[in-house]
Image (cartoon, rainbow, N blue to C red; front, side, top):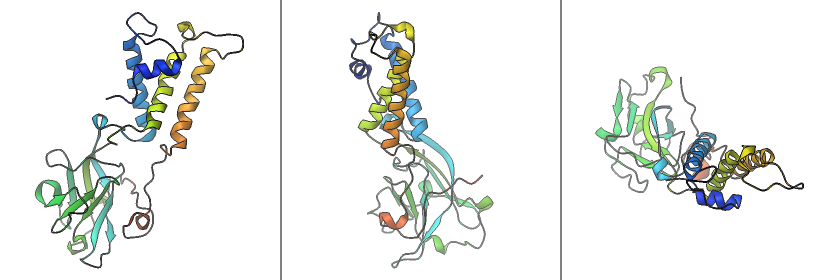
Length: 242
């Protein structure tokens, strides 16, 4: 799965499709697209297709107490990345401090990846917002502080299932910038009133960054709990503990 195709890059540059005999070749452009996708992922701290899902291993988390009028206090973990893939036994882990040891919830407790199916569950997940809920968290022996302040370790996968248009466009811009960077390519005709390849490359870079910035992709902060129908106050994004 790619965020854009070489045909889309060629259409943007208004050149013929890339092939074995073109400069750059079709395989070269495919490599440029791969590098551009990696750059978008690094800048946005996210993956933008199911096939590009990333794995986070043992993310350190704090658990926010959530007061409920129906049951005892619950625990709420805001993961650093979201949306996430369903937590699945065998690949994902949810190790929660219970006062004396870390208990692995995904494999050993009853849970669900649907927030509307939380009855009689020990844990459930809002996959879209990357929030994990622990049922009856306050009933645990919380008098014993978790080691180094780490209430839970979470191993999970994250991605957005389909590639948004702005991510596609940013990838096209970054790829075009790499192609236009080499003045020897003679990719585009240059007249007295046109930019040279170096200027085009810089412009494409600037446009890619503008697309990501305008789309809010460079600062993917989570809304406060009260703004998304949850409980608690203050910002819910949790810093890693080292």
